[in-house]
Length: 205
Image 1: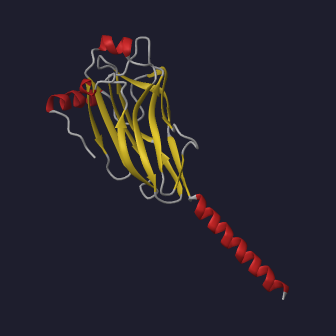
Image 2 (image 1 turned 60 degrees about the vertical axis):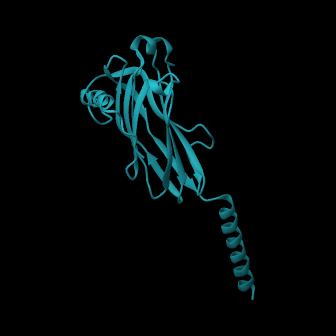
Image 3 (image 1 turned 180 degrees about the horizontal axis):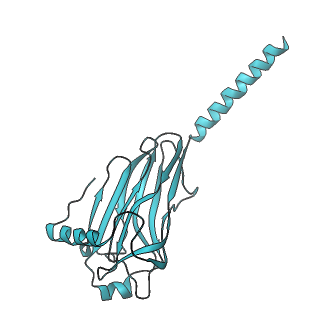
């Protein structure tokens, strides 16, 4: 899925991206207290059965004071043989609940998701109205097959409302375990028990 930005807004995002180093490791100093993480709102955290969906929030905490978030460009990767991307939805931290106050782009090449957003809210308003902790965007996956998929950040570019680049002090990657359906586990256990009982009867003869 991909949403195209108008040319002027694309230029703004391009300018923001060019001022920030690409990749998770930054040339500028991390901002103390700012944490970027993958959070799972519904238990069991980071676990989904085959055929069911799981939601992961991309969460930024520790803003406030003189620091706000005016734009971001974030990528994560996952194992596409275990998970299928169902949807990506934005939070409201950059537009303050008014979709017209930000512009965004989402791209989903196989095994990856990239989301960019830039706020059009005045920095002075962001500084006073933006929450200190934000869900930047939410990703929903469908479990395809048993296994464990890492869900790491592969690119993190952040900018404040005035265009100044900064980075988190800590980045916490995610991991998603895809497990069999309970009925499948029960059937497998039953078959194993039946086979064992049959073996025991044969051994007694």
